[in-house]
Image 1 (cartoon, rainbow, N blue to C red):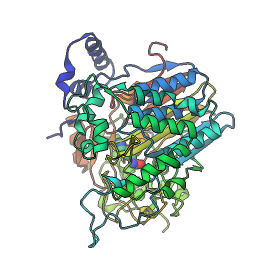
Image 2 (cartoon, rainbow, N blue to C red):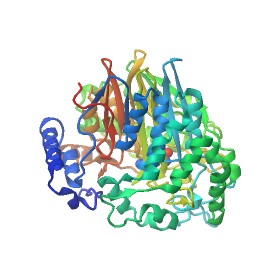
Image 3 (cartoon, rainbow, N blue to C red):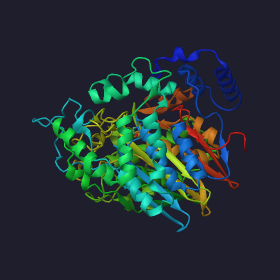
Image 4 (tube, protein in one colour):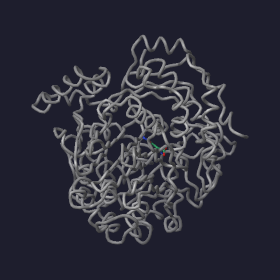
Length: 596
Ligand code: DON
């Protein structure tokens, strides 16, 4: 039996017939007749959500795409006001911290990849959380060396790394910002203070996470006051508004020093957490050289370690460049066979060789070298599944539902920003720091607690990713920009834990090899294999013929609900196009949908 899609407990409530729904039904019908396989449509139908994005959006003057329509409108407003892509990104990130609390954050961290038109250069900044000074390698193990079952790395005060978001955004503003800092926080403060309407989708998420969000009184007070009925309510976050005002006034010091820092440290100490004032004062984001490579004459610009995403995207593209992908039918068993075999090698290497480059010598050059991709290419035998047990990390080298969010911005001057940031799990650690409205991350779970113990995404790790004070946990977040002949081609990224890497890969292949437009690329089903466990995931469903063929090749196929959400902006014929992925129905790209 195929696994049922489990989201959307209150779907029946959402099916009331009104004008909006009639329009929505027409849209569904049109799309299902014209374009794509019926499964994503069936999925939308089952959930009953009306996606904010109904067609490709177009614009001549820059574009924004985010996972929440309010953040999209804030980003668009900043661009219209003359702000650049960096300004818009900062405003979007602060707004998402308010309107998308399951993932948007100031209590988490992330990465931003940028293409700067003035300098014609690519940049990337790592504002990932860091392990607190008092953390230690075996902190999630019991005395006998076994993994503690109390979910300490995912839930509660001990799960958080030192947040990096505010410092990261501050750095970006110092280097590239054009509008005053305080202008970029205005809308976030407004939505926190005056409240904003909870969307049907968000209402369901708040309902679904009632247990997690009710455990700590401070969290419950803010997020569960309206349980069980969140519909037609507004979410108010007054403490968060005050925290944002301090950040607006004092820049990053408003978060990392003074009253807010003391409140974080005090609440942590009171509840067994580790983050101290010292940790906060000493948090530093890092400008890192982005990873670049070429794929079929397109330039790939992506994030290097401590993200594993960029390394493995380039590694997999290098292998795939040896094949004529467009000669295969998209998502046929032969195509899935090829992608899956390539993914296994990449994820196997991830488990052993990837970690924070400030603490571990990550063999990036080797992994992304063409020599190495040739070795993998020669090992791949198509037509069957190589059991994961026979694939070992670096064999050919020399020697979490859960939450994150991605936003992309392109401005009319030619600057491009691609950023993925996160609390890790949905609503992070579940902790709101008393009196601040700050929802904290559970990023410590991205470290490898011990060899052989998988994290919440089933990912295995090793020494490269063990816990050390001040170290950053390994990430899969893969903000990516693709350039063609010196101009933006497209920018993309996604949430989805370990699935981010495979989703971004398929986003690139769909556009470059299969020449899909953004609607087609968004609707195309995504597959995923991460080496261990040895399972091939396919979104939504798979037709019997393909399934039988895959089974005959030796794959164990599992049907999953969609766990990624690609936000892409494309630039073609002097026009921007964008598509907010319906998999998170509040996602929206700015621009007009009838302006082709
Ligand atoms: O950095 C990472 O790889 C994870 N913390 C990302 C978590 C995530 O994407 C959850 N989202 N759905």
